[in-house]
Image (tube, rainbow, N blue to C red; front, side, top):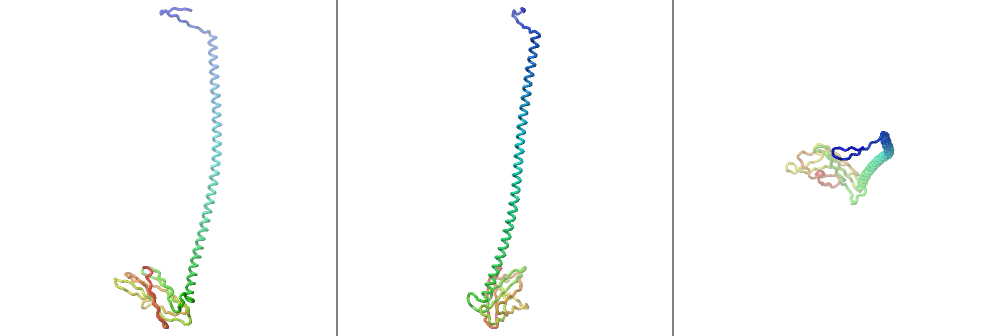
Length: 236
């Protein structure tokens, strides 16, 4: 059909029959349905793949977790065994140290006793007679002390030695030299009466403002010359 408008242009319009339109609509619906089905199936496929991947990852993580838990358990057991071994080792070491210390102390004691009796029976200088074996001074409180004096008769023991022993502490008091005799007047005397050895033990106290410097042991006998020995004050 031809129609002339006011502009003088020719317009051509085509018309579709109802059947053609129906076919076009049906074709579009079919295409859309196919596209939707395809997308849905793809989505299901991808979802299945993702679920499969997630399942595999979960299984892998579960397996790794079990492995780590087992390894952790083994490490804890190893640590416990190591700690027990260390404790046993420390205990054994401590026991050995105690034994060695005790043995060392016993050896020192035996050596001292051996030296003590050797000086009595067979002194190194081969000189006989009375001599001062040792003097030990130990603190026993403020300005108080304990002493132990040991005398021996070396080499020859045919006769008994009689006499008297004393200790003199020399020091300064208020700038003056003072001699303190032990035992002091009124205390029990240290009477010497020995054939092999004799020990004297006791206590003494020094004045608070007294500064000891030396200590002298003096032994006088009824049948022999006196002996004496001067030592530095052990606590100076």
